[in-house]
Length: 224
Image (cartoon, rainbow, N blue to C red; front, side, top):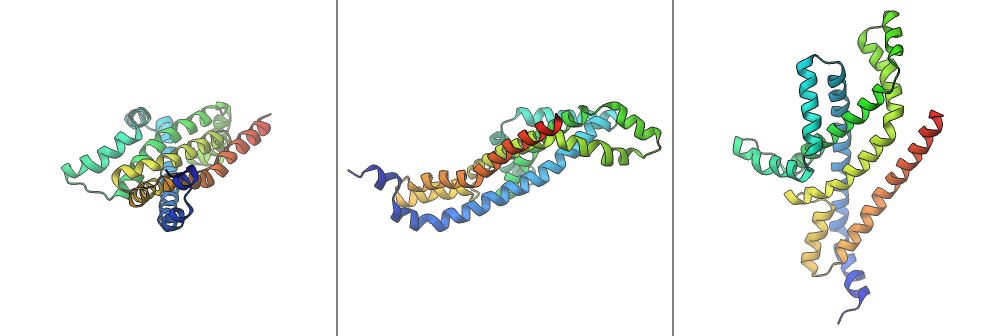
């Protein structure tokens, strides 16, 4: 009967499947960065639309935030990848995963930045307008810089969470780290690839987790 090390930490198996896992890490990082950048930008725009847009735009922004904060990412991903082809829209696995993760991430980003903007005293914007500053200049030069300071710690935490959720992309056969690990496990009939994938996730995400703690402490100190 194989021992623990031979079963879960098999060096020969690890050497064989390491190139597969390395490709998976690259795909996971690319998916996470694309999601965080595009979803973050969309979230800020949705936040501004919700706070400052005309009423119909505000209602659409609220609907977007509420819907995608309530729906599980897996459900959104399955709908995009498997349901859209029935209406003539076919997206590859990477695009589908980016769109699903980005939609959910944008909803949480919008709420984080809304809280940041609403924490700023209204008198600052009113004073800027009284001095003749255009609306978008007030937003860009006065409101957003202060809102970023408040929103960065929770936004970074959400970014770490969405980076972990990239593992759901394996459901639509995207060759991310988890998909490569499960394929390697099937090829080798050994769970070592899954253990190796877990270690790789830890190596990639642990610095980001520490970054969240650092930012929380830093901006808490600045707030005082």
